[in-house]
Image 1 (spheres, one colour):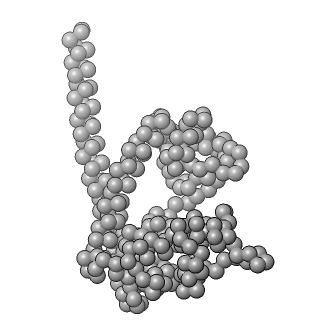
Image 2 (cartoon, helix red, strand yellow; image 1 turned 180 degrees about the vertical axis):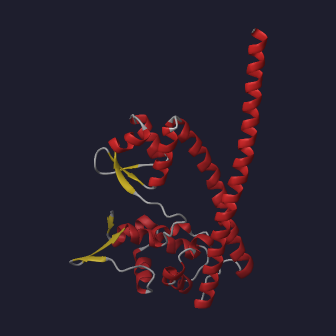
Image 3 (cartoon, one colour; image 1 turned 60 degrees about the horizontal axis):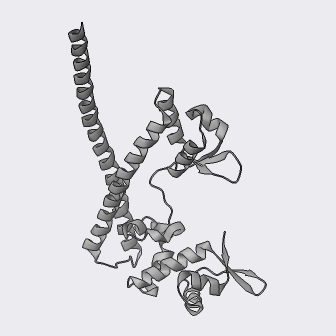
Length: 256
């Protein structure tokens, strides 16, 4: 983790040391660690400072930001609805519940087949695995993906083809997720106005309920849409396959 003195922190965030001290005094920024008489700040201070600067730039007051930050523990998902995802580590409530684990290269190859250097790089670039400090040991962020890949590889599908498919699907789902998230932001603005932040527990509960309902609706809508699209695509592929099969048989009869 990178460490900063106050002047380095201010310079990195594009502000002044005076502002950093003001934000601390107002409770917006956590106190630094102390090493003798030297104040030490970390990446977490930098990210929170950058978030504060962004919020101030968008017209929020120090009072608004303080209420917002102190209410995060009770309504973390509100940040996503308000399109403030740059708050990073301040709010990390995942939509899914993946199980992560470390796996050796040998364990991965047992499931997925031989993994040469280019294939390992593709798995890393796609987010399926991540390198660790230990050689030939990888972090698997979601073991379910490895299990699903292994099931398809076991049925004869090349890993290369799987990665091409998942990369294409990921791109499409990213667009869908942005559209769904934006709809939540738009609804907050429609009902409460631009720049609104909850000022009491009742408003915070309203926002949390709206986000929860949006997440449930988005998840079910996405699943239903994917199921419908998949059914239609399978029918189309079967028709195409049947047509090609009939044409091949016809050509064989003609040759006879």
